[in-house]
Length: 316
Image 1 (cartoon, rainbow, N blue to C red):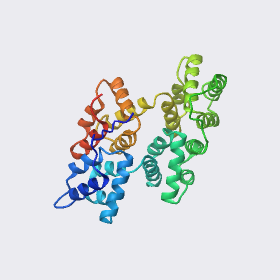
Image 2: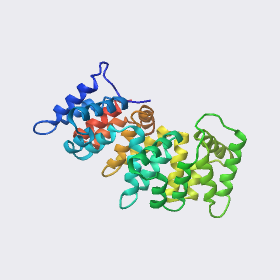
Image 3: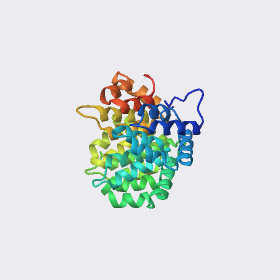
Image 4: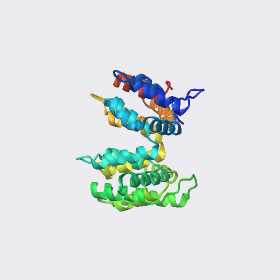
């Protein structure tokens, strides 16, 4: 469920475009006004505002925001302007074209998405960057991590709730034989099952694994695999069993300890606000005993803090 709050009476896209233009004019940008407008408009409304802005002022709103805003608030608002598949394509492209590949970002943006979301991301990626996502993953990643990512974005998967309990039991046995039962690990089996089976199926496989071996498949993955490959498997499994808790834990990690992983914090809040941020807030409170908003307030500041809090909404 989304945490986006939209005013009961919404100005027209033209009115919003005019107000934004006024906020940019003069000495310094009225960032508070920009935040007040954009953080309370849904994806369709933001798209219409951008069309109106370009029509009226012969300039892309995204370019003007890039000129007027600075630092983390600029990154957050710029990402927010896009629709979900464009955002995902943008995150993936940046992760794959940095001097050192951001394995964390590419793993998260691929392995936490549904097959239909991946399909749309791939389409936007190709049309925007004139390069296939598969090709860039092939060239920029390596090892079993690369094999899993490529299999995961190339394999059509069922997205419904039905499952076959016999196949569930069989897959639980196959994963045990490929991992904990043998010396070494047969990564091909893990890649095949994790890339071909639905989230509902994998959640059931995890339950079957617990029933048979007394501990979760997650524990087996941590024991039998490592690095980015392990991270990708865990992301797929966690998003199959409890996606809200998965993102709650990521948000916690991004703000825990000295310093803040702002890139990850922005990525999760901006991309999940209109999908399941309400559930993520509940999971966060359940796991850590305090509202997500409290952590964001203590780890961010200024307009950046205000923008993120506007997206997250009130305390759970």
